[in-house]
Image (cartoon, rainbow, N blue to C red; front, top):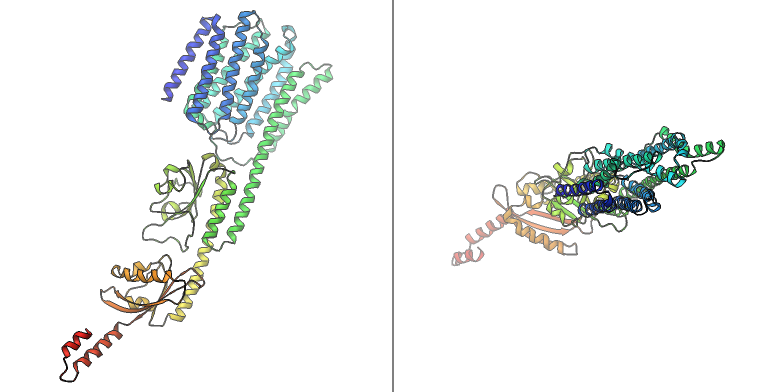
Length: 616
């Protein structure tokens, strides 16, 4: 469908251009129609493709509109009064280049085509300096014999110099992205504009410009190429934001730019010493453009410095919070605060913590007390990059994450576990931040560094927790390791945090690391255990409760245990339930055997059968 629109636009523009040469009397109306078609193509391309930044394309469309209006004014003046020059047309033609300058400033911001425009501004400064020297030394000495006024001379130099600058920028873009169709079309259009403007200037220096000649093909190519560039889908890459690399400008390049900026001053001084300033307007224009380039360079440097200072401050605050974190909840809060501070105020975004644990395998020794948290049953996507984060489209993530992320277009997936591949294969935790793509690109480095620091904090907490549990287990082994009563500590997540050797002997199984009580107790006995744990956890007091359980051993035999359950609400460490089990199977069997023997030795005359039935 986009190709059909481009073919239709090219066909219409070519037909109108053919009419310009075949019907000179209607040239003004035809040029206006061609300009209107190009402006319409730009507007439709903006609406259809929705680029990340619309400003440069709107400015390019405005430039096409101004150029078309100048062509119409020029044609009207030529046909009505017979004048070759029109003041209105000259004003419109000259006003084209400020619009194109503003468009190029917007277009060369960090994007998928040019990540840093500092090199481009340096190149333009040198081109301006060379153009000024060439004009004053080669072209200006030949102008007095042409009969052109100062205003007409300024219009000529603005046409040539402005077209040259536009072509340089477009060629630089084309070199940076040789496979981008929109960039190539913009470069072709800029070349056509410069070619026709140069032909116009040469004709004016000679016998004068005559409309309808082949030199006007350049302007037709300019209209056609720029309109087609806006219609092509690749136009969105011109403003798609990417990471901005650090500015490592060499000292020699800075010196070259400084010399180029001083060229206008040197030329002005040389002409003043010679006796008269003949090219004051041209020198002023070049000096103004050089000032714009220098200001652009300074503004870019200031923005980079401001961003770096802001990023360093937020990372320092986040690092301080992570160093003092005593639990995973504080780590999550530090990350939430950092993301809220880094993103521009009012930016719609969502933050989600994702946790993937492969079935039957525990991947950490830390309880992730996070909110909002999503437990995954499948790994997150990965592209095996060396970075610790991925920037992906939200729709490509598991469906369970789409709703918590608010349906925002792009998401950063930053790993919170050691190893860049941990979230994808071995399981682990990840920080997900969803927002628009431009915002995430600008904040990706900071989020990635903060995620790395949070990973270290989580590792520290895991190692500290493991050390505390090891010391606790050693203490409990000293206290309860030699007793015949089983001691079991169950966390709120049903995980067995401690079990002494007597507990495993009672059940007749071997120790199982990182197991839950459901993995140890036979499924037929889950109901009675679950009922007791719910009752204990619902109590606010620590007095506990006493019950009896009948548990099935691994050999399918039954064991009767007396159980005391007590909540560990006020104890140091994570909350849970302390369970003490005493095997009373043999004791109950001896009691029943003693009772049975008593019944067997009951005095004659009593109904022994009824007594047995009563105590059965």
